[in-house]
Image 1 (tube, rainbow, N blue to C red):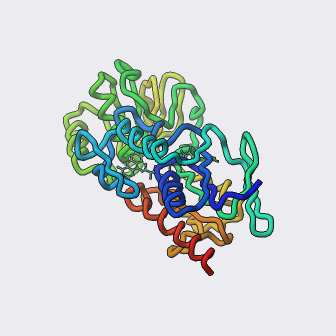
Image 2: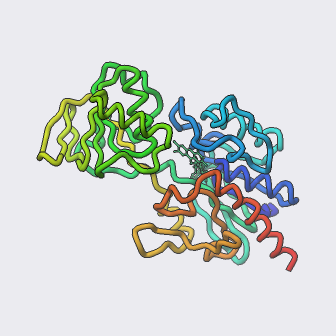
Image 3: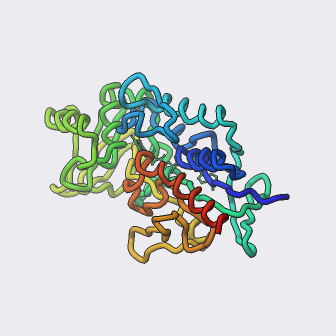
Length: 323
Ligand SMILES: Cc1cc2nc3c(=O)[nH]c(=O)nc-3n(C[C@H](O)[C@H](O)[C@H](O)COP(=O)(O)OP(=O)(O)OC[C@H]3O[C@@H](n4cnc5c(N)ncnc54)[C@H](O)[C@@H]3O)c2cc1C
């Protein structure tokens, strides 16, 4: 079995960009994706609208036409899927990469279905698979979810939304508008500063008029089958509750990076080590691309600013071949 020039772990927008660039530059490639094409985007809320305008999500200048300036989730799925199919990118779906070891100058990749060899590896596994747990009793109850999909389910229900970032605010507003009784539990003193500028006034007004109840400077202490215990500025309170959306962010799979031997910073951010000029990690031939590059700072890299990683990596690989 000849090794691939490049195996890309993760078939999200950035993994797809890497594959397209590799193909254009004559490198043999394989994307291995544990779910469907652009699996993270597929799992985003059904009505989700990107904060980026569509041209900023384009890869390789392939036009992304959307109905409104900022595309919806289903339009992005259409766009990235068409890039994979029209360009006949080599992608294996529903196949999880479980281990990668380097033997001399070749990587051996073991997946849930098979084994492969590659001269270079790109890790583009994103951050959406592992939620930041709140670690309180009751978090494992079936009424708790760390992913929000659709508001209909919560109509006429007492819903608590934990968090104050874009995901939490979008969920709170959508569910309120479908008839849920929404309470937000917010650790800090205000709605997140990075909340989309056109959404922030909406949530602030709903809170001010009392349509959505918000507990600021508050933490969830316990989730009970029919209630929540919250520590607020006025002391501990108990509120009735049917469902909890714990939307407190997600994190990259650091265990996977550690197993590969990628160095992580000693601080809480766990920044992976890589050379910004090539995206190569401390392991020669192993590159990082996309949101995973930011460690716990998952807002540092997104599609808009990390799509360039594809060209950087392929250029670095080709320069090595030329040397
Ligand atoms: C609600 C929301 C809205 C957003 N809006 C925007 C926006 O407007 N503009 C913008 O630029 N960014 C936006 N982002 C961020 C953006 O979606 C991510 O930065 C982007 O998905 C990163 O792409 P990626 O390819 O690095 O990772 P991902 O899209 O997360 O892709 C990683 C892929 O790797 C796969 N994978 C993981 N582990 C394995 C394994 N072991 N084996 C095989 N496959 C594996 C996953 O299934 C996944 O498909 C948004 C994010 C969220 C959550």
